[in-house]
Length: 104
Image (cartoon, rainbow, N blue to C red):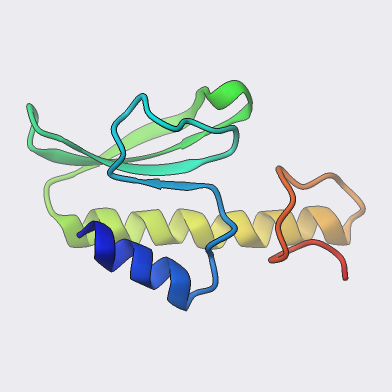
């Protein structure tokens, strides 16, 4: 499953986005990161975003099947790109630098 998501990230050219894929809830947390995890105890997938200081923003979405969790993850990543492109277009600061939205 991790490889499926990583391959799709590469296909979409999203490799510069801050994404954590099944790395554990407390490992490698970064500001403005989108995360997907699997909770062994609850048997659910978790999809959520981190804001500044790597704090959780919004709600943690839970899914019983991988496909729904994967779909949610990529919806959030798509919105991240659109939001930051808009920030740059309106001369506002993006969440972090990325060639997906930085001005040439």
